[in-house]
Image (cartoon, rainbow, N blue to C red; front, side, top):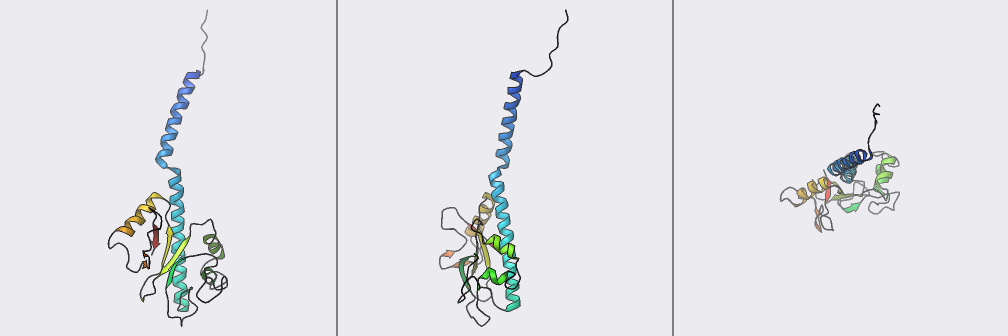
Length: 191
C-alpha cells in the first residue's frame, strides 16, 4: 500500500492565517489612522488655498492701491472684520455679488484668481476661509481656517496660546481671533 499525500491547507490552518492577517490589518490601520490622514490633507489644502488668497489680495492691493473689500483708494478704513469668504461676501457699500471680494479677485474682476478656485473655496461644503485685517497701518492681512487634523490643531493651539507667538495685529474686539468659539477649536492663520 502506498500512502496518499494530500496537498493543501486544513481549515484550521486557513483560519489561523486569516486571523493573523486581520490582526496585522487592524494594527496597520490604527498606525496610519486614515481619518487623521484625510483631515491632514484637507488642512494642507486649506493652507494652500489661504496662501493663494493672501497672494491675490496682496497683488490686488499692489495694483489698485486698495483692498478688494474697499470701494476705492480714497476709502480710509482698510480694516476687515473676521469675515468668511463666500461667493457673496460684499465690499463696503457695494451690493453683492457684483462687488463681492471673490468677484473682484476672479476672472470677472482683475483675474488674480481663477473662477474655478473661487467657486471651490466658496462652496458650502468647503472648510471656510476667514479674512482679517485690523486696519492699522503696517498690519498684515490674515486668512484663517478652522483646523481639522490633530497635527494642525496642535500647531495652531501652540501659536494661539503661547505668549509672544501670535502677532499683535491678529486680534479683534473678541480678542485672539485664532481661538475658536467651541472648546478645543483653533484657527490656523496665515501669513
